Length: 107
Length: 402
View: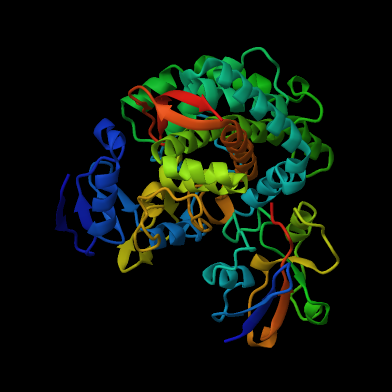
């Protein structure tokens, strides 16, 4: 099953094993990665599962939908070109080893 | 209340009436009975299916093609019975129609929009606490849970000052009307005419102040996103669902924190827990207790066969305390990971105003916890009865300043 490496704001890495087909957000909440709040439970409404995708992985992710794009304008931490909502990243074997950096705040 | 014999399809029939006063007074034993009877039950009193476990409630909420909303999210089936008011364009709609109207309200109530009202909402919360500290003894429902949202939400919408007293009664009618034709529903609808007239008037573009949520909805007409006949009905959704729900949410949070003083102390030590404390209160009390869906086809749900055109009652509150999903579900615990609770629903119809609710809850609890050492319940709490909403009518408290 594909792994995600979450890198906390303080630089500490956290390796999380995902189940096939689950989102990066779901894997994070299941493993209690506290910096992923996911208030809306994965319905793309709240922007509290914000992550910065490691540049080398960015192109391999599915394209961003309009609603995700709009929500990212409202993130608590600064939006950057590599910002995504982790609830919109579905894990596949192609994404094994995905590196996601966690912002300092979600609200 | 007993679980009696099984029907042919193995679905247990129960004689529970989830809209009875005795049920409302203490729903928890009945919720447990409903959950433990099976993944799907049948309620003979109203001839509807019911789901009370988390997994099935979640499944129904997240399959809107099978469990539709356009035939009404109350007991009344719009295919068989004329709705008591023109149906909501968002709550009582299915994709693709729902997708378009939903996008409009999502935009108006987005995280970006919340950033713009945040300071105003926080300042009003501080002002409310000033007044409460002067009072010391007050009713936490009237003077706090109602007074605070009333001091900000109608203004944020852009409503005129006159006639706002209709807002809470109107919402009361809307949420009672989702229930069966019991006394609560009948009386609410019989008395609804003046409230409906006020709301219809307020939804018009000319009556909404520029810059407010209402005006922002009407501005979407100019963008071509909705028509000028749709806009007032979408404003109506905010008037129906934006006030009484947060009143009950904030009321629930204060009631929880007064009953669990260790959690209140925890919050006082770390004010960043305010948002979580509110969210956990929404899970724990579930201000919106139930909603219905209607099946669009024959479907098998956790082994139960349900025919087409059947009403399915989702017990959101029971799902939020399902021990299959939650550790120590009957404990109010402000650091609990609440993500996934169904207090705001789930899926495409999940509360579109959830960010407004959380913002109000967070800033209000922050202001309270910073300046109040203790909240004590000093009188008998009185329940307010509604077919859908759970909340109090009165909660006498005494506070000690920090």
